[in-house]
Image (tube, rainbow, N blue to C red; front, side):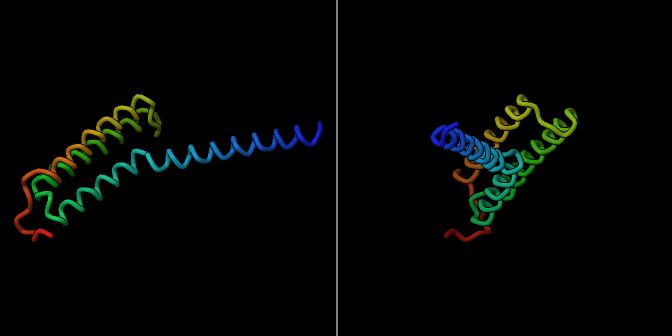
Length: 117
């Protein structure tokens, strides 16, 4: 094997390893748990700013708790793992919950106890 072929094989192996680590990072950033914590932070921020009323925050929190409970039951059904269909279902539910949080932050109702900025 000549030096040129050896360098080509080494660079392909390095690219494959880099792509695999990038995929892991992407999955970690976009996991179900990361989305849940991000949406919890969005709800808390909306309450702090007064854009979400306490009643709206309670509804959003209840929705997140329902999704979390469903996630837990799906994992129990498959020995701690989520199937692709389960991930798809949870992603759709999180998308709908995200839209609900956005709508609560941008509707005409605000918390009268918080001064506007």
